[in-house]
Picture (cartoon, one colour):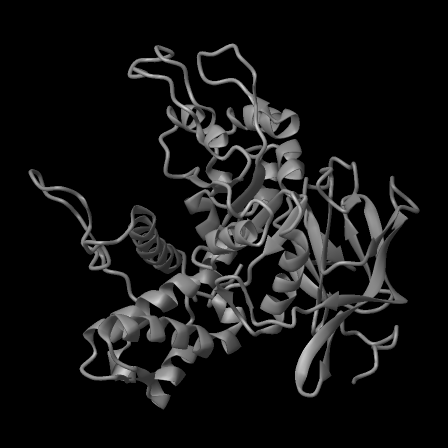
Length: 466
């Protein structure tokens, strides 16, 4: 077994092996110390994999300075060191006289935000981050270190009633995580109610969440129990919580705090007993910065945070996941199916902007349309180039001519395929117009540079410049 790193090594995270299998991760503690400015002497210990600093209360290092953005920067512990990153702040992060987007910190290194100088200082203590002994949690599969770390957290959290926020790109399996928590909890035989906050019209979302009384609005011909009442004694999963209208967020906050609600048009307080799991593919911290997501609601929902990595950052899980999906398809076809070596390599080489959901789609399509029991590279069809958006002419319907819109798809899956195709084409066109300049591209798109960079990474469009 390897020895823990010394306090002067630069690695933030070290994976410890036993018999060739990772068993635990060591996080070397550090701290950030304010060495000049209004908060002189304030410090925060880095005892987890990511800490943030900024003006908002959601940060670990709170700096109430008007020259500092709500969430200004983050320091993340990684296998290759501690990385300081500017979270698209207004006034920037500086090392010396240089404004930086991201940089790796060395012991004693100083940086400046607003009117404060901050020093990065390693400590001698080591935090042990356990890894699950299993390569799955309920129906979620993954033998990579990152997934086994998540599984270890879920094994501890699931039996409790703690509120959980699951974040990650589209297709990473957020709903499967929520379902797995439900199955592993004491509420497993109670209701599991899923609400996609992005799929409900704005004028119906309050009624959908909290219910309504007969006659409370046009069309309310009978009393209706909302999702929270339906989930009573069980679990409610609020998917795409970042899409929730900001005007409804205070009502949701009151329900979460008081565990009681009023139906639309009603006066009676109804007690509810539910466990809440929320999920989003959006950066809620940035939304708090912009005022589109309430800070207090963010706190209430983020008691436990689970951040799912994109598939491209855990490529070692791809062959195992693909084998599971292929076995399922082989069972439906009544035959044993395998991958040819070139097919496996093709799967490993793809960037997977749609993550696990895209992988499953690619495998299922190949298994359905392939000639025999072995899947070859030529059988794999990747969604690298979306079908162009065709301009409609008078008298015909507008929209995508997208072959992914096939009968049998669930609404959410069909919608996501269209969104993925749109995003990829929009971003390519945007970058082309601005010759790869991300600042001008972000201005035209009405996005922050940080958000645009994250979208570009997701779609494999990383040849950009400021």
